[in-house]
Length: 50
Image (cartoon, rainbow, N blue to C red; front, top):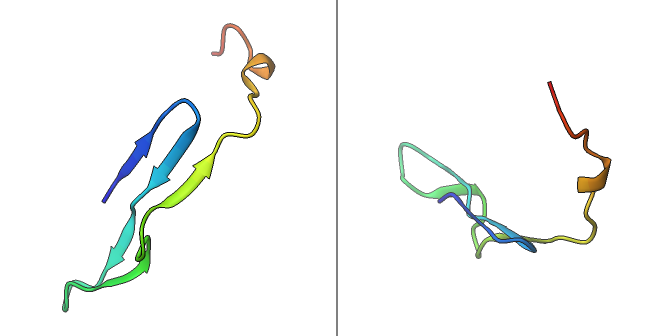
């Protein structure tokens, strides 16, 4: 479980586990959720956030 991140991708392995059976109930059951960066908003961030 957990995640993996690169400059262009984010992979989420999070799962919800049934404490009684140990079986996964929700989440990345067939592999990670995969997200690909499509746009950068870094220029919209303030230079000195408080």
